[in-house]
Image 1: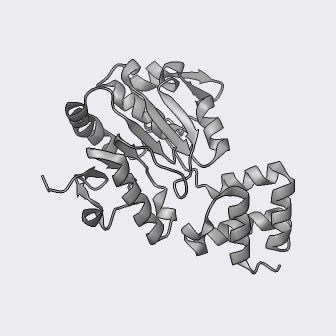
Image 2: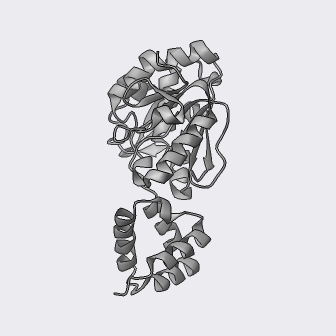
Length: 263
């Protein structure tokens, strides 16, 4: 199979999807893409690009496959406990009840819905509004539907499971009260404008798939999106190596505050 001329393939993909494969770690991404090309019985990248342009099903499958969608509610519960007990009260004390929160690369909605539930311990649902973005239309559709497996909601606190989920067959439907608090939109972290004036940004276990240059750029843009004193919550597999240079204070392993002086 002649899977050469990857550079041209990257250009073709960008024209079709506006996804810049150059920003992803190449070895890892190529392995994923090549398995998909093989699955579709294509002998070359140009042949696969023709399929992408002619078959909607193949195109949707490709975008869904490219965007890494491993998500679950309350992933790494200890970090959510710290947010609940320490950081949410701090943010409310600093900025008031109407917090502007962005869930970036939100995947199937597990994270923004977890945020709503965590905030509901401190605020009325009517005061909670989260913007959630992802590059993948399919996962956004899943998020809006709000139907999840038992495994996906395993770490949700028991009181929230009882209050906000209804069993539907083998799955669990999240309540409309929670869904109303989240606005889902398409968004590309490498290309699109970022929201401004955020009090908290949550972006977890996504940036690890990007090159060091792309990571630096994303964390810099997150910093510019935050209000002074605002908080960035990242994943347990990530760290902001140059956080001081970018204007963050490291509050814990996974929470970074926009600011200039250590507390």
